[in-house]
Length: 349
Ligand code: TXA
Ligand code: MG
Image (spheres, rainbow, N blue to C red):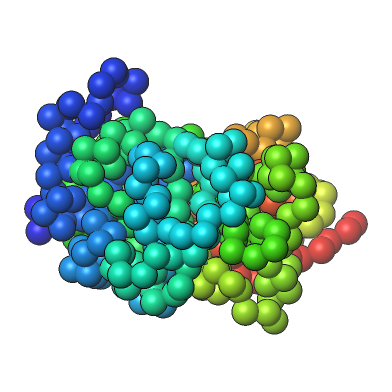
């Protein structure tokens, strides 16, 4: 399949009337799948009401069928068609954080969306993305748009159109290139079907922001205890992994350097994933800085691009620094531990 590229300037007025947006929306209406930018990562969109369109999303990504998709909307009026019994708390969260990087799990109205999109669950995950291109495309299509991240399953999520192209060229109808995304990690997924909201996946809206708005917030025990089954089906899969093994190290730069030296002495090509502040410290074969430690938003923003860039090196092994689990650091560490798949090495000198 020929994958069309549409380039769009996200800052122009009246995007919804742009020929590129209209063309991409026509593909969506024809039940083809199209990648588009959101403020978090690029999504791979398709008509959430059509089994065939949703099947194309799963096929292009190689995604397991038991992992439901987030339904993207551009206005609140779309919500009542497929969600019911929306709690007051959920409404406050929408008013406060939409459009933005927050996904709410709500009770589903049966018979409207493709069962494949929600993996047969009685709930539905919804978000209104805070990106002008995403909003214009959804509006022009007039559809609820099912969209997972536009990467091949297991790989780091895409934060540029080039990442999407790398993974999905020839497998999807088109890519709307609206530039790099911004937040860099996916939306926070919050279950709003119980007594109080529960975080199923940390993301762009922080726990602190949620608590400030609605008070008590729970957390899926599976986020900190790997023996528990996650309530968000996607959280049980390994994700975001670079090709070479990644080990996170909780320790000083000097402690990490000692690990690097040991592996190099054994003849391995060793990479370090660090930050702007520390990159001058290391002696290694490959050193890549992922944002600034003093501003964790910059780490989130470049996280997936950094993970992908190790695949362009000949590293045999990667050592990575850890980050404080606060603010967006919670999402960063969630993604990094999944990317690693190995226990964190604690090393004191
Ligand atoms: O920022 C984002 O959320 C991006 C952009 C494209 O919007 N999308 C994204 O989608 O990250 P995806 O498919 O990569 O992750 C969706 C997550 C998965 O962990 C999935 O299991 C969970 O949301 N999810 C979807 N529906 C759910 C439901 N009804 N109950 C619990 N978890 C659900
Ligand atoms: Mg994903």
